[in-house]
Amino acid sequence: MSFSQTIEKAKPYLTGFVLGLIAAPIIAFNAGWVSTSSAKAQAVETARVETLAGICSATAGRIATAASTDLATIKGYENRAKRDELVAAAMVDIQVPAELLGKVTSDCGRTLS
Image (cartoon, rainbow, N blue to C red; front, side, top):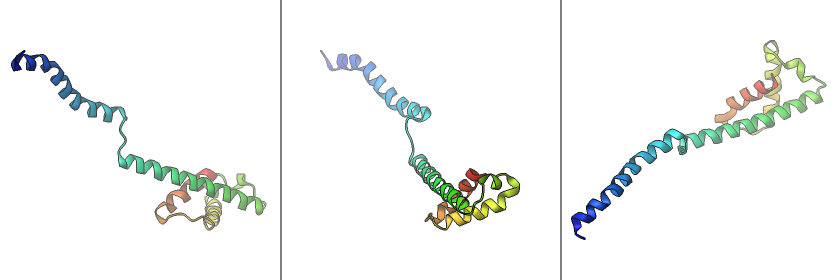
């Protein structure tokens, strides 16, 4: 078998290999099979915020129970000032990184509303 015959037999395989190299990343990114580092960082931040907001909500519930306050009285838009005070009191006991403080406070208040 000569060199030119070997190349002719290998052409379909080489063509498939090259097209696969080009098509695989395009398909993988479009199908969501590949996650970027920024997507992972966003997912970690969201998980941290949700966890800390859950702790804040539980702490706010304990504070309201200790003060004999029904949580139903702080629900709704018109009671947001009371809810914000309760969230602020709950956040005192929780160590939250400065960059997440606004998001955690907002999520905690939203949970209580």
